[in-house]
Image (cartoon, rainbow, N blue to C red; front, top):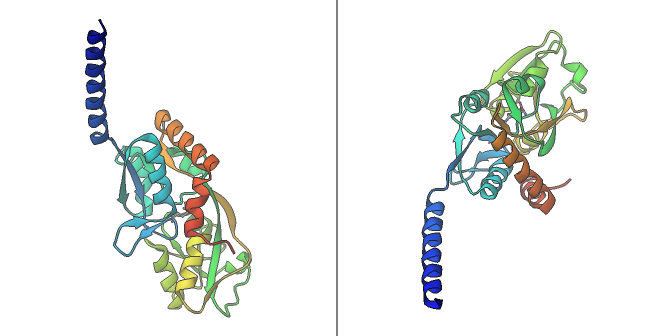
Length: 246
Ligand code: GLN
């Protein structure tokens, strides 16, 4: 009887080992759509790989879910379509929750707060958001900066695929100001002489992960992972690695 029991136990153990060997190999992909032109949230590291706060948060979420993170880099204005069509499971791109976007996708709980700020050349006469009326403004196509610039009276808007191209246009005097998210703005200002961020922020917003409407299982899993990462302090640790407190 004893012998029989141990045979059964060994067989059960063997079967569970087999199952486990299979499950590590068969981790399903969790595809993240992003636009890796948005430091410090997502950008290309020295070796060309995509790094940054969002890349690490997404990796931590994938780890929580036992899935294999795959990053798809694309234009910012293609991300929502990729999520809607199922080409990507989630959009993680410093993406601000807006009413408009909520019509086409669901958003996770927010994981960061941000602001749209204005970058100008040092010595510019643009000192507040009101001074933008009638000026030429550079933005990244399809971003909240683009949306807000649209409302500025008599402004001419130049749209670029990459935020840093808008900043380049500013340093080359092709635009008078750039409206962009605060953290990338700090990175771009640090990389270029003669430009600065004006004191008054344009808007305040929240970043969240975009998920296909109706995919509640994934939404719940992502929200549970975010909550866990917030409670454990892991999320803050990731942020602190990329953003040094002032
Ligand atoms: N937060 C901005 C938006 O959602 C910009 C994001 C980005 O350029 N990656 O539109």
